[in-house]
Image 1 (cartoon, one colour):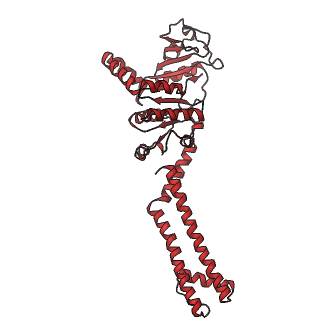
Image 2 (spheres, one colour; image 1 turned 45 degrees about the vertical axis):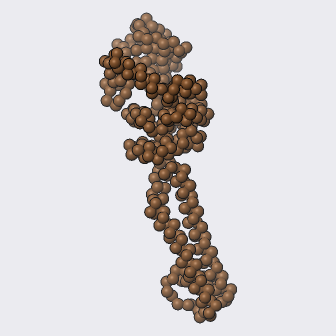
Image 3 (cartoon, helix red, strand yellow; image 1 turned 135 degrees about the vertical axis):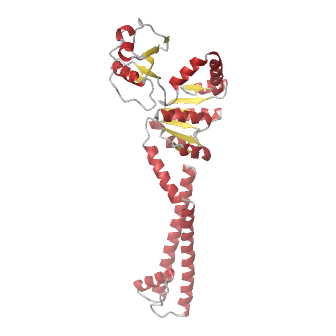
Length: 356
């Protein structure tokens, strides 16, 4: 059941129960007024007579009644039975269909969603998105899944992920997923048009979010980039390149896969963005900074602030403010390198280029 459809059905049930309660109160007031006005009883006696009549407890008349009032009493009993029966029917339906249990689960889920921040929004839960979810979970990165298909949502929830059934192309869905506090959105929907709408909506609601999208064609890839996607991946293009690389350089591919994905890796690759406010190594060469000697981590490449990439930097390569260091090493080596490049600072959950 979607969050929205559940809320709609729950609202309808609540209105029906409220309507039944008001109807019962109206019947009670009508009966009290009859005995008070027609039989000239006190308010207490009139209310008491109405109560024992509606509850059908079997008590006798508190004062003798004429034929007219006895006919009215029979009608009052019938009205009470219909009204109470309607309320009981609504409550029974709510219990059978699990409205109350679902309501508790939905409220718990909403509280959990409300606590999300620095998280990723994963749109879709198809075969591609499942692999994304596995990697995010392996890295212990908080994320929420949006999918329109109930079956996909239930599967994601069964795996322990936070998931809601919603249309990711709608602003309302992204707002529900706390896009204002998210740092990344991954759109892995099957349709290029849906991915395009999702990226446009995400960038409108949160211009700072990193938007990554799937594309099924080169034309869609270009359009998604124009729409503001920070990265666009085509499974067919990427898959073809990886197939060729696996055939031509199988050991290289095994090594790269081993350091990029999975939770049982020996070596990791990490990014470090040099900030002049925190990094003491700016202005030094790699030889002078002695990063490899002090940490054991290897600097594979350096991307300058202007976008220029230096692959396999030498010891004479100077470290400049705004440089992005792409490094490889064990978790301990990377932690040591993190200490060398500057004091530890909190970073968003998805770890954009690290300022150190």
